[in-house]
Length: 147
Image (cartoon, rainbow, N blue to C red; front, side):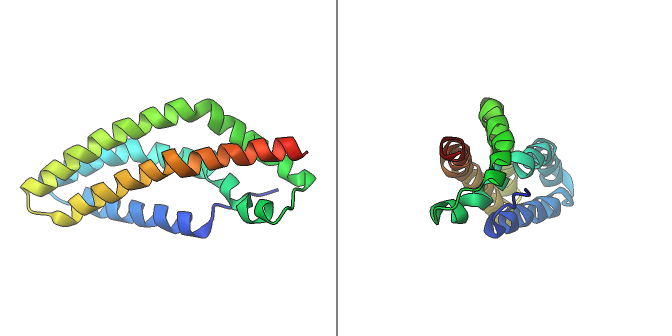
């Protein structure tokens, strides 16, 4: 069974990537700071899109009471997320430090759009820590219990 990342989350990731790509193309300190963020963020996003966010695609079916045997496959993803969660949270901390640097440089250079981007990405990380990751893990636990 293939698990799809919910469309709004996929769009949000794409938008964040696009904004970061734009920042990395800036000359000078902003480009350097944005590239530092990108170096940390890209491998993290790959993990999220591989196993942290796809389980969320089951929420609607689960909320409607439908648990099927095929859903058991989600346990591979949610168990991996549960195991990797401390590392994912540490990556967020490093990303936030890099975003703070990007924000400081953007303020200094008079580029408020990158300050806004940095704040949006930090809020995105917080949402993942407080909502998305725990929900994905709970989906696995729920499916395990029901099956």
